[in-house]
Image (cartoon, rainbow, N blue to C red; front, side, top):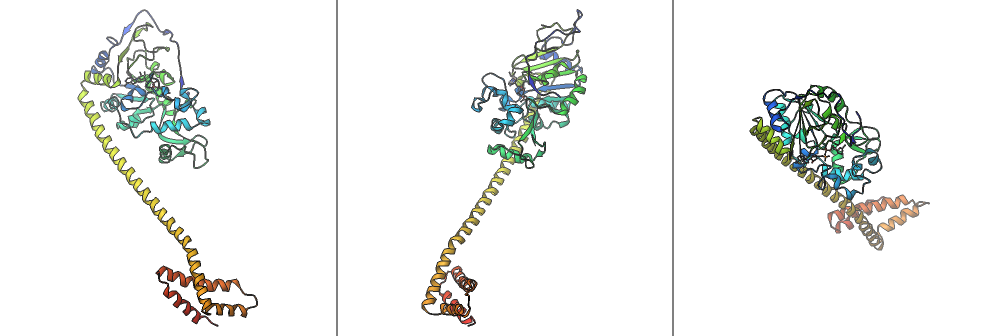
Length: 424
Ligand code: OAD
């Protein structure tokens, strides 16, 4: 499947255009779409979505002027905004992506009211598939069966090395992202990247394989919160049968400037009139659709139950993280303590040496051990330093024991005992 690409295609008139025109939808409103659902004409619904369904969760979209992510990337010094998701750029400079990834990383956001339309349609056995461009994984958090989901631009769910394609432990990657570090492959030290489809990369196989089959079967297409500017995803709207009704819920019209694209204003005079638009926020549009279908209460209940579940999951995660942090802190403290003790040991050695020297000096003055030492030295042609070492280590041992007992008196006694025990 081709790599994603931003387009600005001009529309052309449909080949099959004819004078006889069929009206699939009563008019181009959300009400006429709800009517189709209510009369059972829509049983294989495909939902296509984009960043606009997640803005209510607090995630920026890409292209909304002023508020979109691409207007907010000056701090990264990029040659052009999309470079942050461009594979060639990433290979040279992964830093901007990783700085952004820290902000985008799933785990801090909850699905919106709109997201719960997906499991609701699935529950009613009306959802053929949900195709999303989003990498935030919020669809998964609604409990939607993953078989019903195509993440066309990948997600943060897995990560792999861009050099050897080895899959990497995701918690390792996550920890790096949170620390503001760039993860590298354990195998080949190559750059690791979450399996998000960058510009210049192929879309997941699953996208091409399923789209080929699904779109032919579609009997209602609902497009939510996308500017439909990125290929090949945007082209999907043209792949439903010519008689398939299409609804766009978005703050602005989109997808009109392409061959077989939307025709909300009957500009292209298609033989079949089948496009509807709701201009406004996704949550409002979805609520209205649900209301018209008699599902509003059910959808609201799913949203609320989901929120409670999310709150519990967040709490559990916070507790787990706190426990992990506590254990890490404990480990650090234990390590520091051990280091301190070994440092103390090192520092103590000079004391011990000093103490030993004192003992030696002391015994020298008393003509005890040194005498023996002198004797043992004079008894051997080549005085062995190991003898000295032995003697000193005996003394050291004595002093060490005494120092560990914090009692200097036995040191002398022990020395004396040592002297007495030493064979002459
Ligand atoms: P865009 O930012 O291009 O478009 C988002 C659309 O949603 C815009 O038309 C907004 O007006 C609209 N919108 C925003 N908030 C909304 C809301 N609450 N309710 C209704 N409409 C809302 O985002 P996408 O179309 O998703 O690709 O962008 C497509 C791809 O471009 C992304 O997947 C990403 C990006 O580059 C890659 O990174 C490969």
